[in-house]
Length: 383
Ligand code: LLP
Image (cartoon, rainbow, N blue to C red; front, side):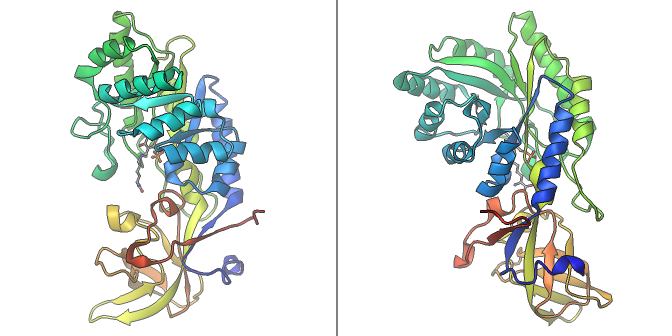
């Protein structure tokens, strides 16, 4: 019950970020990546673009992985060095390409020849040369939720392997682009290191094939995807960065001096954020009890969209545990945070914490039902 004191006065629903945990997580990432001098980590801004958090992440020296012109702008504003910013996305519009070129970002991750041709034209008009890494769809199954699997051929993502050499040849003829690397991202919330091993082996194969044609790129980007334990016990949950980087160091056969990039989102920020909500009502159905929260799927979409599991806890009660369906106030049956959840005996006004909501939580919040966006608070006051 000690934990509760600093949370009781917060207006709900809100996101509450543990800044100390974020700092410890960043230190761990830095310590692990420092073991491999040619490895570079870019934080995937899409996971959480809150400026307070971005400033802390940029100050730690990580680069940024952006997926829109606005994310590029926000990353620069929050202190990320432009030469450490990569910009991905299956459909960048002309204005976004211009924003990124004018910011002198490190590189575009591009997924189609039509887009590369447009980047070439806009670069000419801006008097710039655009650095590009080709996002390749390696046809490696991440064995994660199908909505967040991206590296198999049925997905819209990446240049398909049969087309790769053709795209390289065509792109090399364009005067205002410079191909500097290959980019891969096969999915998110991957906890089986065997999947990353398979990715390494596939990339080795692709590299060997290209090398036989005399093509070697200075940069390889493996994207993100390192998963976390959403059911973590108490203590300090930090993702398994050690094993993750070690897997790539062991199985990826880098060419001499080849720089290796990663784009990590969830593993950096997920555990650092909780959704804090208050119980509006406890409603008794014929066979079950519903806990109706003041937070809804507009505040935290993951459970409704992906049936994602988040640990839910009543931090106000000392009563014996009971089972509840924990739901929000939105007019949709999908507005449910968990079914048959064991919570301490729950009553109106109790504070409910939905854990590990720092990644793809606030970032995916909407004003559906014309509700307010959730407020944000930090464990260390920000000035
Ligand atoms: N790089 C690229 C090209 C990506 O598409 C993504 C995530 C990342 C990096 C970062 O992946 P991470 O390290 O966070 O797994 N909204 C979903 C997740 C969507 C992930 C989209 N791409 C969720 O809430 O689970």
